Image (tube, rainbow, N blue to C red; front, side):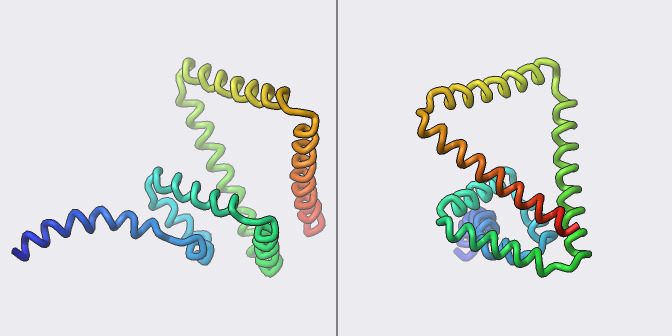
Length: 168
């Protein structure tokens, strides 16, 4: 009887283990060092990574403007509290990560057949045409609001680059 319970319980536990490992909260992920976080995320399956990304996106989308500003201010304070060596190391990690992503994209492109490349180009052109059509179907008020959002985003990027140049 006990063996039967064990046989029944084992598959149930096996099904729960991936879920238990995935239930890292956003706070726990935030508290990890970058190396720990990277190791944790690399240990996830592609589906779990996608789900985690969707979860974090949903959390950010649900935030109020004040919460987003508080999060940015917190990150800025953490950055400002870092030593110059730590900042340089973080910049190098970010640069390496970007270069690795670019390399993977290049490798993916190089591994494509001519037909796949043509299909990828067509998809890009279609997305571009869809965006253009959306723009053309917008009212003047919607276009003005979209322009303001873009100017605001560009302004943020401009502020970042100005801060970066001021610190160098």
